[in-house]
Every structure is written in structure tokens, then in C-alpha cells.
Image (cartoon, rainbow, N blue to C red):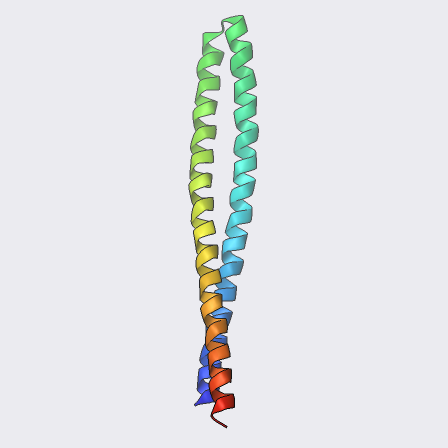
Amino acid sequence: MESEAFKKNEDRKRKISEKEKEVKKNEKGLQEDMHAAISLFREANDRLAAAIKKKDFTEIDFAHALLDVARTIIDKATNALETCRSQRNEFKSKKRKLIASYSQKEKSSISGK
């Protein structure tokens, strides 16, 4: 029976670890998206400033559209990163519970001998 419980805990540990790796991979991709969007935002801002000085309304419209795209990407990435953070906190909580269950089982097996 102890062996079964140990296997069950090991399986939980493995699943948590796999999910953590997936979340870390997603976070890395989201951070790359965020950096690209920030670069796009800066470029659009520079283009907008130059277009305003030249009074080039076509370029102003284009720069404005770029700013909207960058803002949308940044908003989506920010929300997704927040979800990843929540998932990481959930994994930490699950790990603590798993460790506590290991400790509790170890104490009960020692006191039961």
C-alpha cells in the first residue's frame, strides 16, 4: 500500500513538473512576443512623430495602425503572462502539499514501527 501511495505521489510530481516546463516554454514565447511588440511600438511612435512634423497624414494613419497592433499584442501577452504566473503559483502550492504529504507519511511510518 505504501508503494502504491509512493507511485501515486511520484506520478503527481512528474505531472506537475511537465506542466511547469510547458508554462515556462509558453512564458518564454510570450516574453519574446512582448519584446517584439515593444520594438514595434517604438518604431510606430518614431514614425508618428516624424509624420506629424511633416504633416504626412497617410504616414500618420499608418503609424497609428502600427501602434494599435503593438498595443493589442502587448495587452494579450500581458494577460497571458499573468495567467502563467497564476499557474506557477498553483504549481508551488501543489508542490508544497505534495511535500507535506511525503513528510506526513514518513512521520506516520516512523511512529507506526
